[in-house]
Amino acid sequence: MNASLENDGPSFETLSTPGFAELKVQRSRFIAEVHPASNELAARAVLADVTGRHHDARHHSFAWRLGVEADLVEFRSDAGEPSGSAGEPILNALRQGEVTDVVAVVARWFGGIKLGTGGLGRAYREAATLALEQATRRRVHLGSRFIVQFPYPLQKTVAHYLEALGGRRLDECYDDAVAWTVWVPAHRVAEFLAVILEVGQGRLIVTPDSG
Image 1 (cartoon, rainbow, N blue to C red):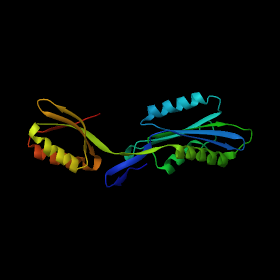
Image 2: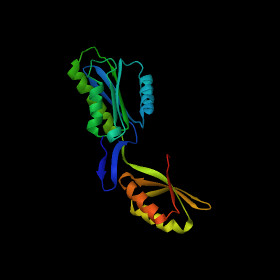
Image 3: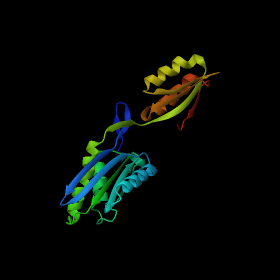
């Protein structure tokens, strides 16, 4: 999903809880699961778990969407089904649902009646869509983390500009100087850095924080 630009900056939708669904079509049984996954390693871990739990299914077709905008990565697999009849329909369900950082796996048990490529595609997409409808979503706002170090007299000034630009404090450390770990919305980072360094007049140090 492309990040959407709102008043509070670019954001995207993902899942906070998994979703599950079961579908029966012409005696074939489909069990679909969708899970949040922040990277490919997490997505493959979900795939391995689902495959293990439904080891007696004939197929375990899947798709995932990870990242946003230029970093968006999509992957799909038919897992032995006719080309384009499983992975792509599952991926299309994720696209239609406008979610990312999500993996969907659909296990299928053959019921003895061939569905054809079109029938398979509709069934896989419907199963994945139903699972998505059962999941809980959350919106993630894009931004950057920084460690800001400054002398005590600058506390109110730094706090004022941080709040004015939609940022927030994540952690605070008070020693010889103040050190805050802060989060700043992606669309306000350049402005934040320019303003904060100007008011700091050389007494303030800002470094990226990987978290």
